[in-house]
Length: 253
Image (cartoon, rainbow, N blue to C red):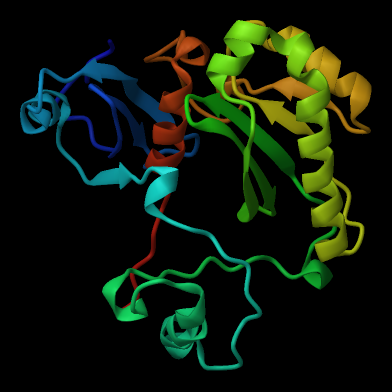
């Protein structure tokens, strides 16, 4: 476990609560290349979550990563309303999709880039964890699509990449076909796989079945990892925390 190096270092700390442990990451966004200050997984004794968090928390803001079971993503037609009324309009729009009153939940809006304003999808990214594989597709830095795959880390460990390759290829190709229908043929640059055991074999297998480049994600290409030179060997859940620690929200008055 890598603890925070100095309490004076600033950055956004993100936590992901897991059974009996916490995955965390801390990123400094005050520099041109975001600096990964700390990341790892900390054990939690019993139900002493507060004690575990107290040992990890340093100065700066904190973000909590929600589990997939705690939220739902829905693709909707944008209501024709002023920007400051968008969330209220969406809350009313989704009421029939919910089994509870919309006012009893939290609603947020992610703007998906319009196909007319983009020429290339940057990448799709896959991360395999206990609950399932997560496939995300981004356009010009904005999340466009997220889908849970039917293959998780346990299946990969037990059956091996070769035995699940056909299943993975089919699910990823279906996702790409759906994106193609939604965005009118905008090409996808590449598929990135989160670093994990035997990732090279999985990359080679998928690259042979998909018509796009497939490669492992190298955090050193997008982050300053001098404080954590072995960052690519972190457990998969840490990549969710790193992603959350990279988020920059702008609050408008």
